[in-house]
Image (cartoon, rainbow, N blue to C red):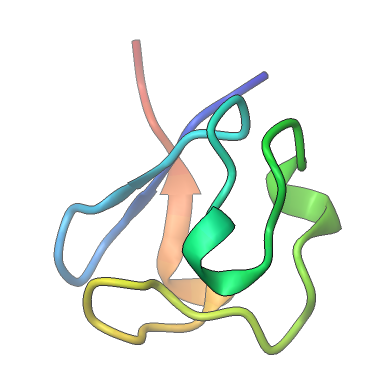
Length: 54
């Protein structure tokens, strides 16, 4: 699964880890996150993320 990086604060969403502190279980693809999900570090929206380059 691809990782996504926040363009505001550089926090990385890793689907293998999810975001359990905010109700997103491990294994949740970025595309499957709720539309109102926000970056746990800076509260930026999903539109502020891009695929992390290898």
